[in-house]
Image (tube, rainbow, N blue to C red; front, side, top):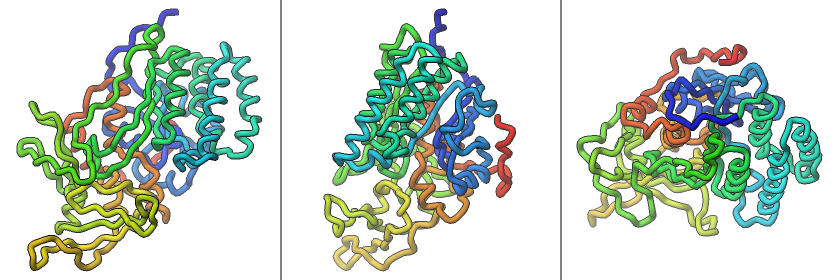
Length: 412
């Protein structure tokens, strides 16, 4: 049967199942866009945050215990996810490199079958492979492929779109996945995206795979989001701010869409994002060392984007920057450390995002920035570049019923 050419559709056409969904960085972006979304999440504290935000979450916590035919997710035509990356997190590490190669080998096996019976037999062999026995996290990276193949053979309805994201060290796996997916009817590719390129007040890189089911056109180019803001580099001057299209929000964040005739906007700084709570210049000193020296703490001023917000973001130290006798800026007294709301804002979460439980910093650090998700989904679903109104809607979002969990039992 010939598949109809991929066409531009409305947000209402799409229905996402988000694997390893976290606190909702992608799902809140989908909600803003008017796209249905339900997440699969293991951690109870993170599930509590999702509930408070009104995001749908499956009753089952384990991605491996579900599949495309489950009643809660059977209507989804978009698969997204960010599998755990600890196995690959140390660049150049021999063990991490070996894990990457093992995943690529097993992924090739998973995509080879031509029918459901053959796939089930291969999947049983893959699950018993010594590489997965030694580190179960390695197997979790294969789960999206398992869902893709089961949608094809068991549900008999392939996903229209697949979006996967992780740290940059996973890019070789995503490139390999893209090659495999092109063999089963998808146009697919993978690239590293920089979050500050899209107005996130933080330098964070993510390896992103986008695949669109388009049999017969598998070799075509796959659209990725185009940068709207200046990329940060140490020592580079920030572009001057525009005047017509930079709209300050009540929470201090400046989100902007490029004006006509202007290619990109200046990067969004920490001062832009935190202007209400921190109106004076400051410097943030990272909890992490740089250049291999643990004593060489990275430093960013409030006129720059934050360094990557991690689960240890509360350990970052902030100091006032004040004008000295010579007129130069000098480091002054230490300030309060980042609040959870501020750390969330630096990840581009709305100011009123209802973080729950005691591990909020880890939830924030593990999440994909919602503003980056907004751009990724808009490209993957062919909905056009997000405009200023949509971006400002994300910044101004508040939960409809604060403290009232969503009823995930009913699905979508």
